[in-house]
Length: 253
Image (cartoon, rainbow, N blue to C red; front, side, top):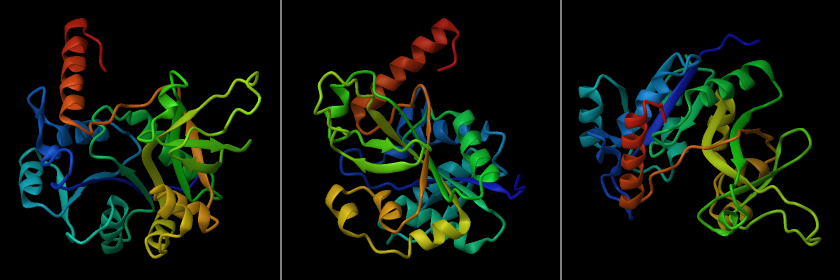
């Protein structure tokens, strides 16, 4: 097993079309981004957790609660580009986990599993996660990304459509929802951001297809459940209610 260091990087930006200022929106008296950071700090396989942002409002708030912050360029097109800038500055980390800043219930155990997979299997350069949809109807939404995997657990394709298509209705299809978390080897991440988006990525608007189009295997860890993202104010209110119910019942969400 490789003993290389692992880092969790949370890209965070202020500007959001549907939810401006989302990272600092208070949920249960705590900024959304801090919920994510707190969960990441519970992962045992991370040597460091860094918030990568181009906004001083986010940076100052994160400094106040003790987070390590990396200021990045405001010109980045994606969170992956933002974390690559942080990684480029330091050669200390071999395994990089890209953690979405709007998934406040991200599972620390999943983060550990991603790092462990990269440590144990040198043939894997990118690892991500997926879980079954509760209903087939949920898989029809273009806002939920689907993935199909081969018999070795590697991604065959990601799509906004419900895949695979069940031509034979007697065949029971298990649709997998892709979770927006990635583990990269350092060299793979830095190469990934150098490639330009090709046809499939531009068609689906899914950055992960860039890896497949360039022949990089993306291993998928299939979990029983995923963590809900916060895309809108309604999502934030629903999460606050969920946390309140969990506190009353004494159960950790």
